[in-house]
Image 1 (cartoon, rainbow, N blue to C red):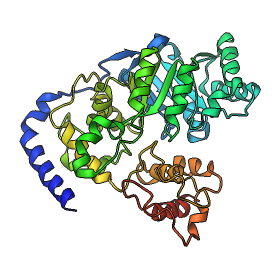
Image 2: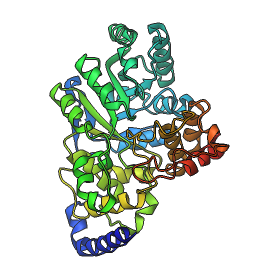
Image 3: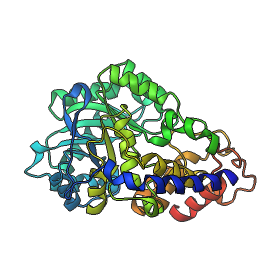
Image 4: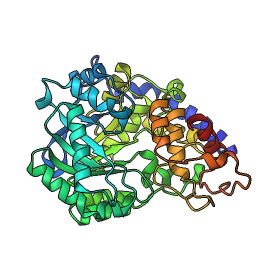
Length: 399
């Protein structure tokens, strides 16, 4: 606890000392607009550096607001809001389809057939009210066998010939993300990748905090594989950029033009690792706040203090995507990391629709945790998350 108190005292002093410089470091226009468009690797697509994620919204008005602010890349999935997210985007961009880059996703398994994959794509196209998507992702890949399924390659080749997709990709945020990416890149199976990447994933950030948080880098090979994607001219998109997005926790420490969300987005945009940052956009006010980070070429004066403070607040509470150190601890094979991810959608994102939908896809999920007496998972988390407490909470909250 002494480390935490010392850090809070240091952070308060640093924040006060930088107060006079923060606003000057990152001026914010009265009406925020996208300031930069980035080439998405070999696709040649030019996408806004802050882009629209739809996992937590299905409101066409928000899509139109973002589009009016210069956002031109809109990402969705057949599972988001039970298809309503795709429908909202399709409705919003009607008549403006040529102004936007659209992507959607479906989970294609290791034994799925190309006919099943084509049926999923056609369902998405119908909901999006378009004859094609620019990028089609194999969604949430955490098993190399899914990318090894030859049906995925044959399906995407056929869909490209038919003009239903332009480029193919893979998304992921699990513990097997790096080997899955390595295989997909080595076999030339993707034109674009969408990965969980935030300041909390970056060894350059966690190394600086090791004296305070005693963290080990999560997925230390991720920067290597992102560099490989860049070398192969594969487009890179970052998601889960806010490390849980508990924005209200940070409001007392923020200044105009220097919010935590903007700091986190600037970290991604200035890392050199991603072409664009995808973020769930759930209100006009948040859209304008996020767009305030567009065009960033360096961190603002107060950014590092905000990121370090947030990391401290989330230590022992936030399950970093891709860690999975707890995987072998449960004798009944509860998928702890996935359960905690769904709980995060409820507790952090305050999105019970998304949380319950994702939890239901886990099958038995954390039901065994309600009657567990051995609690073998205790102590399995390297950052001290109380696993048994949180998995039981997820079962009660979402089951």
